[in-house]
Image 1 (cartoon, helix red, strand yellow):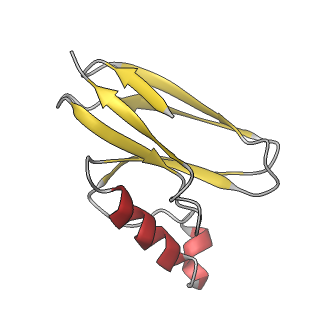
Image 2: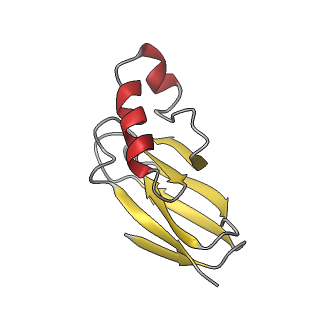
Length: 108
């Protein structure tokens, strides 16, 4: 639920999907999780949503791990933002963002 990191640090984030459905992982700017989550929900109503891995076209999205299939593992490298604060990570598969999220706390 929480990752702590220093500004500018490089993290490797691994998502082992033990579920029966796909998931993704986005890192978003502070205070923008609901905005990005709702946009992901709306993408579920379009044919193009899945093709875009339910990743909204938003400047609030700062890092993306696309859809990870059930039983698979996804990986991404993240250059932690230099500005201290609490960023969120979230799954934007439609309907997931409200429960599948956590915090990235950036502090020196």
